Amino acid sequence: MIRRACVWLMWGAMMAALTLSGCADSVSPRPARTPSPRLKAAGPPCQLVDWAPWRNADTTCLEVVLDAVTPPEAAPALLGLALGPEGTLYLARTAEGAIWAMSDADGDQFLDGPRLVAAGLTYPTSLAVHDGALYVASVGGLLRLDPLAEGRFAAPVVLVPDLLDEERGFWPGSVQVGPDGRLYVSLGAGCAWCDAAEVAPGMLVSYALDGSDRRVEATGLRDPWDFAWHPATGELWIVDSGRIVPGTLVGGPPDELNRVTPGADFGFPRCMGDRQPDPALSTQEADGCAKTEPPAFAFPAQSSPGGIVFYDHDGFPFWQGDLIVALRGSSTLAEPAGYALTVAGFGDDGQPDGTAALISPTSEHRRFQLPLAAFSLMRVGFYPYHPVDVVLSAEGWLYVSVQEGRVFRVRPRPAAGGVEAAPPTPVALP
Image (cartoon, rainbow, N blue to C red; front, side):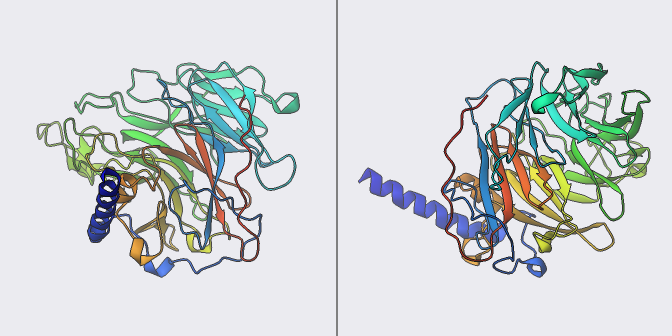
């Protein structure tokens, strides 16, 4: 009887979620860009993964590349990803201070088990590959790792030992080499939870490749994570998480996508949202908000955007030119926000068109369209795990890291024939 009652309770919860689907959050499918069934894609049959987040199975393979979830540690198990020009996937194993690499040595289009290529680092958070070297943003500084034989890297060269040059509430965000050949790094604000006017704002900084010539490219951010250059316009875009109001279980300022212009000030900590003064500050303290840069696109509060990448391949033609975003998820809300892989639409003019759609968790079938929180609460999304970074391969496939130690691959579903492949045998981890 107890088991039968539980089944009815679960069914009731699902029906309630379906009823609430009309109150879905602002991330919703775009009818004009709804994928047509069965893409003309090449590649091996999809791996069958029953417990992966919901996705459009007509068009998308969502496969597990790495499953190394471990018991919770004081630091995240896995954060940043980077792809080398030869297709090697590099992973920042943050808690253990190491870098792993995965490649396809046997040519079957599935990555082989991970191997250790660097160790002894202090909480590496993000990675970039440039001219054969691996650049690492870490709590221990901004580092360069030069290649050795057999795919390993030499001891790190410290480019900037004081990357966190003042007390900050966040670890470094993303590191990338820009089109101008400079190293860019995002740094969070001086306090993660407080909202005092004197808090040092987060910023985007750049350096010469040897760590010299520091420049502040933008300021007034709170928790900036990743950034990307638009493939057509060359404009630089960065995501930022709005402040978390202590003690609140709902709402708060939205998270943002911002266009970076030279010397841009996005307002934190004096201003929030669309240049609105912080109500906790006096009029004099909040002066100047009208002169700060407004967000170009808003994500729901506490979605916590992390890794981003512009999609410029033909594999998923309906995402061409759009921005793929990993939403890390909320930390204090009673109803979860984020915990998703989403796509923010960009128009032909290279600017956000105000639309967004869920890649995963999602279902294109109208009967099962749910608000994002319902996917999380029903455990058919990423929740309670945090998707944190996303990179794009030469084939047009997406790799998504989950903070707790998992990597997924999103690729177009092969057009015809083939039976879904069973997951590969687990491999020994380094």
